[in-house]
Length: 390
Figure 1: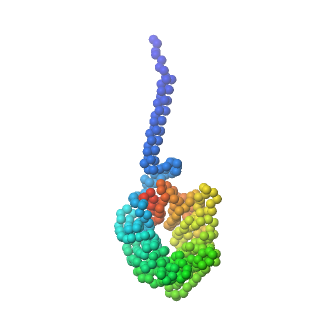
Figure 2: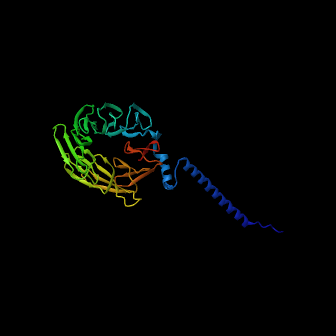
Figure 3: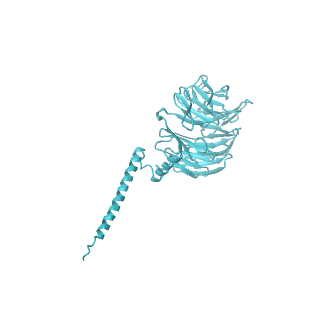
């Protein structure tokens, strides 16, 4: 009896074809799903790697403790004070808790709100307007309308406020108020111009930064006034212009110039300097421990966007330095963690320069700030986001 022979080779070919067809179909389904996801979330695959994509989605699922929408067209200014997110627009101030609930709203009218914080205290000053609001945490301490328009303002950790404002009898003036809103100091600039004023952490000294414009180049004149002794100490910089001068501690003043940063004692004598080869992007402090300075190198090519980060101790010793392969927009520091805003990317770095994590956003980051050493507030993509970085 003849037994029919099965065409085994043909079936093997069909089996291989079916497996190949299955793989192709799976690939098409996955590709279609990924394309739909990218389109839905407005992600340009040309601007983000696959590694970053999956890394960020893992972060989004597990690390975001708050994500709420806000109207970016309001040009809101943000700060953190007393554990609350402070959002100030041209018509109101909102205090938002970490759950996203608005706990307090104050109505106002602001031309260009300036927000400053120091410890428990919050200052909102209307630049080009005349109104000042001072809070301790969520509680309003005082508010005042000045006679002249506000140019600049600052607040120290005791709630003392220094305001540079217009003045009829001179180019401008500086007024200082205590935590109760009582003015205890005023100085007219005369023919010069006061750029900034701030109060020492103890509240015993007021420092004024004058721009001298009578010569060929602008120069800097610092004047420190002691409230108790009523004595002045002055310093003129022979070279360079220092648009920013600020108390770091009672006996340490930081003056930022175009070619170097200098640190002065309370007697206004130089203690140490940081040479600057490039542009100063930003700086921040880890109180009592470190001064962090970000510098952009002189550009030597179209694609040179590196930023140098230097960390110094309070005596001027260099503790660490590292490079971020990106242009830096702003930085914030808390404890031993540094947050770096480079536009559409947020870096979390420790004080040894090790990158702990990176977060990508579709639009430029508007604001970063630490709620505590484990949580950071990020404003981007018309959203207010709290990220757990622990």
